[in-house]
Image (cartoon, rainbow, N blue to C red; front, side, top):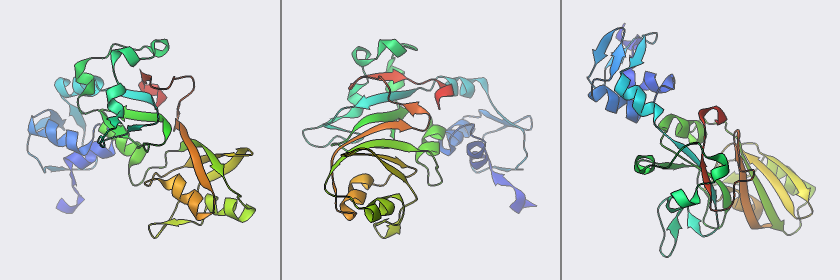
Length: 243
């Protein structure tokens, strides 16, 4: 029956072959093959168990996508530049590549449609991922994402045991209860936060709600990707087995 069929672009996304936007682009160019037939009509629905493949041109485009890890300094914005500030993507230059991790040479096409995945505020620093892979972006910041993001946070003020418990679960931001987090002391003025969501200025707002103030915030991990020895302002290519 027709209601058992699924939109081809959605199925491609579900199978993590490509993002839905990329799927529509490939379909319109006749680069998607379903059960041996080329599909070039947007909105086409197919059986959920359909055999799907991409034409060689589309496969090559997927293969050529890059994902980059950047150690973002303070004073840079993640996405759209604000007045008197620079965007983090401006740091992705040949001169700033960390040669210890060199896995290729930066090319102009690597900067096209290179999107930030999981923003960092202008007054926060640390690991920032930029990618051309829409499927990876959805995996990290999609509504159903369970990807961990780890932060080292310096604070001032007195945090009670009750406050620490609330940081882990029970706080609400913008009228919505936050998902459970892992929060523990590293030393007398630093906390480690591990979150699976990333609302605007979330950690700073969480801390305000329990009566402490964030004085420094650094992201050190997103899923399996760690900042490690990547120097501030430097970047490196990520291999697929890292994420």
